[in-house]
Length: 316
Ligand code: AKB
View 1 (tube, rainbow, N blue to C red):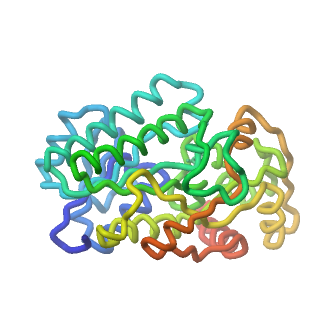
View 2: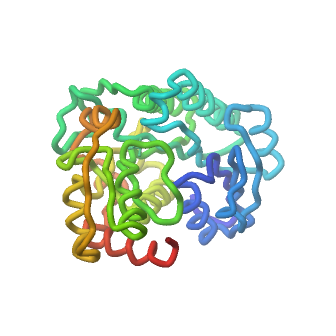
């Protein structure tokens, strides 16, 4: 699928994943072939053509696709687990209706390929928590998780019914230094670095032993692009692929930070996000992603922490 003839649209490009994805896709396709769109402008997207776009506006989306002769859409706009619980009806509307707009564009052959992220939030309190398999009990307990689970089923349905080439990954918590996370339960694992460098302390909204699946953003972006470039016959899952990087709890990441900043102090004050985290897996079995399209992570905790600290030092 890779090649210079592709024209890419990223929806929700100003978010944590979008800014890094725009940069990586620009390296492959050229920045003029990667159109960034979001509801508001972002200085981080200054190198790409930009369209101000509300993902709920199907007509405006269609116009942007036609204007730029888009062939692939990376649809990242969504309300995440924590903010979704504050505004459930809007989270459902945004997460579902925007997906339908994009799926319909492919169904009607205006675009050729779609990337749409799912999440570990599709799992729930009745899912086995250790090495959570691809196929298992799924009773998500957040609106975000419910919308992602429903979205997965819709993606598979559009593939089976209309041959829509839609590909997806169930992202764990993503940790990167270029874009700010927005409203997730795993956001602590990014905030902690900023606070460690600025103040030497961090009050964590999850308890010290809350283990969650996480991933370095660089690995997540690479996985996304590898999945999109994989030959079509390798993609045997059209819902969404489990993907594992590493797993840790707040104490483990703070101990690793202390190796670089010995006086760093973490305190714990769990809030409503604790219940969300408690309903999610601790680790993920991603054998299908490994077998089907050759996924392998690069970052372990040690590498992740040293890379975050060295990159953020100049930024903070
Ligand atoms: C969140 O915490 O809501 C997200 C996710 C795991 O999908 N980072």
